Image (cartoon, rainbow, N blue to C red; front, side, top):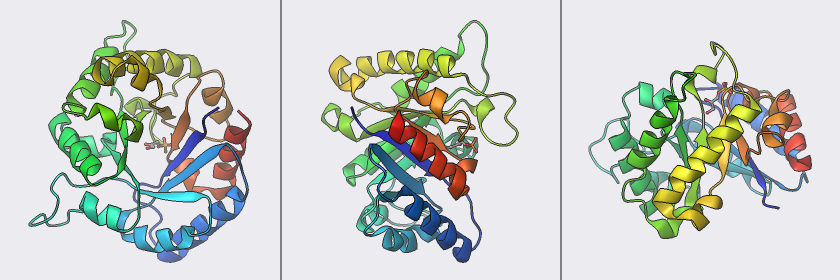
Length: 254
Ligand code: 13P
């Protein structure tokens, strides 16, 4: 059985280094000797070096929340995938809906993915529809995102791809409702089918598909068992060490 991936996307939190260190140290301690789970924390860029240092000797990996599509140069405020890699960080989230809302088109997401892969990073590609309709037209959005975001994807690097399915309407404290584990499973099967057309059936079957969107200590078990999620991309509950530890414990048993 392959490891479940429990990733925390801290977004633009916490706002002090003191809180960052306290939250991370608590998570690192609670992960302790847990088996069968890969734990990842993706903090804001400014905290990457410090958390990378604090993560040494533990089981929590550090990842980045985004990376520019240009290697280096005149990109004010930009952070290069090569800078991230140089810190010893191996994973980057790309295509999160909050970045898409800020202007990341599928074309930009595609370029970011290809640059991140060239820099040697593993990519968590976030996809998800803004609106869920009863006739399943939203599946066209998922297909389009995958096909456009993965144009030119080197098939031999499929083991460095993770998909996070995050329906936009289920994300954050203003979520209108939460995805069901059954609904997730339906979408995971569809995502794998589309991926098969991009990287081939065999490789598509080994690409982990995570669920994200108000995943928490209460619903984690159902998403991982009934929903057969290969892991979770957790927002708010990853900033609560007690709840995040509970999610990791659940994942280690599922
Ligand atoms: P929440 O868990 O806060 O809904 O955030 C989900 C998310 O966007 C993770 O990337």
